[in-house]
Image (cartoon, rainbow, N blue to C red):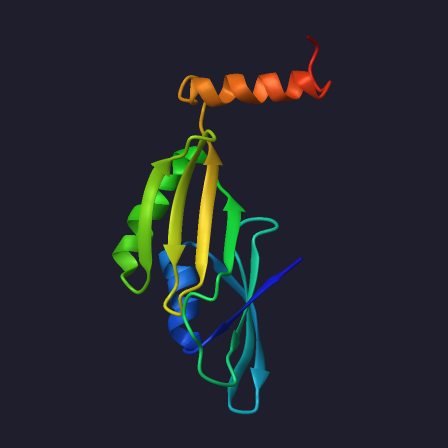
Length: 143
């Protein structure tokens, strides 16, 4: 599966993802008046196809993409994306469901969340206990 983002400024958006969030540009499909599509990848299975929008875009359409991340890399990714300056960065924050999340918004309002499992010893104990209760009740764990 590839997520496709329509953007108003292809160059600015590609810069945000490559320079700000650590994606690489795999290839660009040429079009009649400039690039028609850019294929970006951060890690395996973290692919984005970026295309110029044919008309005006409205930010905040409700699309949010979530990518798995490595816990020890979240802080550096936050610093890198903040230093880029083109988008918005929130977090990282620890969630009650035992992840550390970094929420980024590109120049066109597309939201990408990088989420990493919290390491042993830093989990929310109450949430972990509740998950064990649910799993046991559903027969997924030995009682």
